Length: 217
Ligand SMILES: [Zn+2]
Image (tube, rainbow, N blue to C red; front, side, top):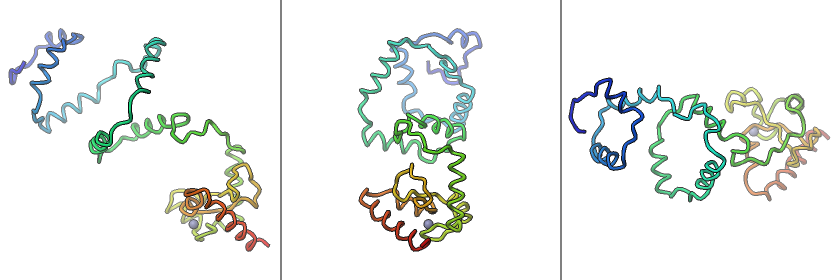
């Protein structure tokens, strides 16, 4: 090790492939590379080499025995949460990194359903989504396609918030889809009614019931 500018021949590269290094050798290599400043050019090379890199376990299933899987899962469970210092380090390392759409899709898939911290155990919506959208449209039309709190229009909501007006369940019961229980709100107003302490719910329920009364009676 350590000969500068020395290049391995093709044969010796082939030979090295699949060879297992002893811990001693690994330590030596580690010590040799420690503190070395890697040039931007080399970094770029390393990055490029990684693009074509295929993990050894890609597309392989059933490679671990039941026992091994249990061991791995147990080890993960025992892991204490990262310290603040570690988390700071990680966040610093990831800061400013641009994620590719594929990477984002992967993250999304990994956090979907039971993997999501907010998973409620597979609560099915009361109505099929198609009917849900139809009903939402009906309510938006009834409410003049305007947020009933700040009067932001549906069109403006789509432009500014990237989505149509939300339909709020006044009594917070998602199964209660009587039109009397539904009201169109923009995302920011809707958020105000759904986050915060539970005791606020009473306030908003009174608020919308009164609003509804003023509008329709
Ligand atoms: Zn609003």
